[in-house]
Length: 141
Image 1 (cartoon, helix red, strand yellow):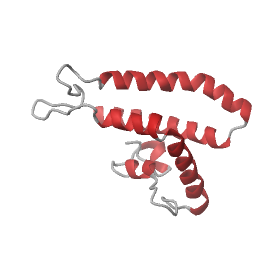
Image 2 (image 1 turned 180 degrees about the vertical axis):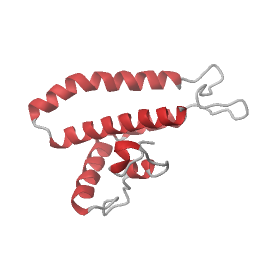
Image 3 (image 1 turned 30 degrees about the vertical axis):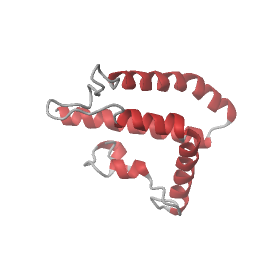
Image 4 (image 1 turned 60 degrees about the vertical axis):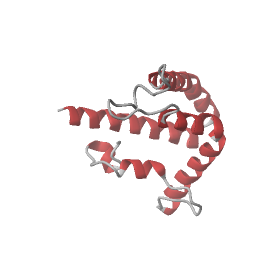
């Protein structure tokens, strides 16, 4: 039962992210402004909650990523991804992801002509698929 609930939850999150990405690609200015005002505060709060769970403890370990047998030193992969996407290459990632989606729609490929893979498809291919989202080719990992 937990696996089914987890899959439903993951599918819902992937579908929401897909909807927001499509909105960013295809919506007109008033729709984008409205979406930005409602979604950006929710997304930033979500990042803050997730990152606070990965704040290093007094030993410099990530308490969420660490186990009893393996300590994960900060910054953990969650902080590294946050930095990569929000700080270091935010604009580059945004431009690449839009280009990849546009090329995927028109050419039906999972990659661009460059070395930028379609990371969404790669993540989703890692798990068995169920539900409506699976019909679109994703598993909603």
